[in-house]
Image 1: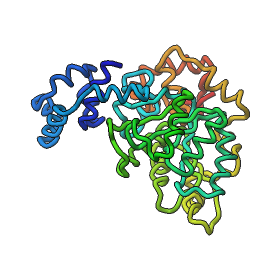
Image 2: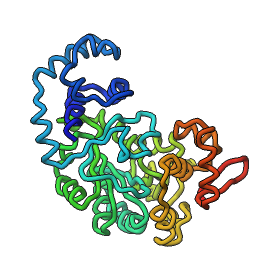
Image 3: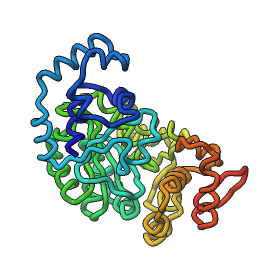
Image 4: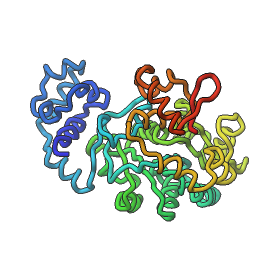
Length: 359
């Protein structure tokens, strides 16, 4: 962790995730880079002159001890893309972050994103209380931590003692909205996770929300839209999920109420599947009871990390060997042997057109 304080310092100088990935592609020498950062070094990675000037000036003003104190105060862990704790799901999104800041640790359990309006209606709260409460025993509930539907989804999961993850649009020492500080603390203290990819002291900013939404969509198997107006941040999350070939569910609502407008539109267009009860989701995932999901997720341990990655990729959709290789960025020749092992072990099975799916 001590070495990663220097990484947090570099990130706080506003060196982007993409640039950090380039700089540390071959070696994670964070302290060496931080202590010897210079114009000539930054030019190697195509920083503009304005960016170089800003970084060098900020470096002169920065005190790592302050950053360290902030990390320690909230017991923040930093996971990079090379760490085993870094979620595989985030490696497959369009803009993979180089690092994530985590309060406590990320539950190793399949996830369902629940998103909706900040102006939650009584109908929306009842839907969450019934549907989310029914599925959170099987899935980690992920949401934005925003006011309204998102906060309510976190609360319902916590009341049921089920895992939940809040992905926030500020740095991890900021509580936005302020009213959710108790919820974030409760999530972290109960060994679930609050996650951010933004640098130290990043405040609330509407430009951060699309980035946060991509994480929410990327970390989950599916997205459930509870309530949403026609023009809503929820639209971004659902579209991102669809772009990642993930299923979107929507709760139908009053055709005369603006908060149900976009859910109804999604269902009418065939973009989202309607959800009337928790079983609409559980049946889609082929879950009959809690034991069945435990047998699929908890009791399947993989000695080989590559086989775990292959298995996770197939959980999203049936894939051929070549498609699997593309998903996890491994040559198909390298995974052919492992496909046979998984098939013999009863983890996967062959379908039509030379594709494989979860057995």
